[in-house]
Image (cartoon, rainbow, N blue to C red):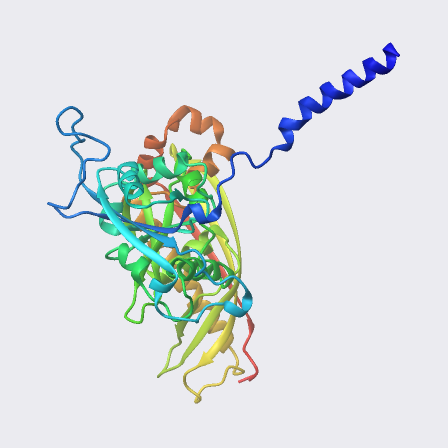
Amino acid sequence: MNKRWSSLVKLSAAMALLVPLLAGCWDRLEIEDRAVVLGVSIDKAKRGSDNDDVTHYSGTMPAPQLGMIRVAVQIALPGRIPLGPGEGGGGTSDPKQTVWLIHVDGYTLDDAFMKLQQQVSSRIFFGHLRVIVISQEYAKTGIDNVNDFFRRNSEVRRMAWLMVSKGSAMAFLKAAPKLERIPTLYLMSTLDEGINMGKFPRDYIGIFWSNSSKKGEEGFLPYVELREEQNVEIQGLAYFKGSKMMGTTKPLQIGSFMAIKGVNPAGYHVYVMLEGPQRMVMTTTTHRNTKWKASIRDGKPHFTIQIVLEVNIEEKLNKEFKLDQPGVVQQIQDVEVGKAKKLCRQLIEQTQRVGSDIFGFGEYIRAKKPGYWNAKIKTKEQWQETYKDMDFDINVIVNVRRVGMKAS
């Protein structure tokens, strides 16, 4: 009897310990009670902008002496977001029917979001944040506040996109693209498809933060512009030195960056002009293979970059000359070799002038020449100066693989 009683007591104790673990919904928060933020834009605010004393009080807790920023958020409207494939993009061109755009001014991001929370009944939720757009004007002053706030927030996904806008950042959240009901999702798909088509390297916000934290590399972001038809054009790369944007590239220089890094797939088209009247073809790069070799010469790092490009001929602009003529394909390859060398060297020299190593040459030196790094470099600041005076040898090989469905 005592044995049976003892077993019953043990079973009751075990169940008493397990019951609290079964209450899995004690802290649930219904999706209808969340203000789901899909996109954020950050601009510099104009002088005299409205500022509510939410996070400070002028009498006892004065505000910091910082420039004002304007933060806009795009919040999903419950029940308005298309869910199934039958309700995909193109249903309406009015984003007001699916999202709510609201903006506030503040001294910092946390200050702005606190003011925003005072105006929104539901708790602001960043778990579905997809796009953060910062204006070029703001990026040039430094984005330390942006990096710090979003990196500390556990809800922010590292697969979100951070981008720099030409002109107003908030205009991107107001856009009404024809191919998508939600502007932020159109921005996201533009860059995601750019990766798939070889138009842009993979550079999510997590990758940007990782590169910016390295001693021998700097971060870069997509540089975008809003066009007249509410479509978005990738204008180039916005390259940084630390947290400050130092400049931008041209669209075709994205292809040069990807060639130097050996990023695939490839998808950029270029004109190739041969000797003679209007002897011109259009080619597209389909694949890249790149190798780096580092050495130390006269106390400075030296890089040899070997780039192999596989290209197809897409278009011939003059029917008077034939591609099957002897030497024509070789001429195309030779001309494109010269173009590729020139574009790659121009991009490297452009970033060298401001000490922004977006390629990661410094990280390669850290890995392959640790003795030199530990003796001569040591810090990120020293590498930024060393990078300005480096020498490069760039070798390019171009192979024309296909000429299309016409032999000539």
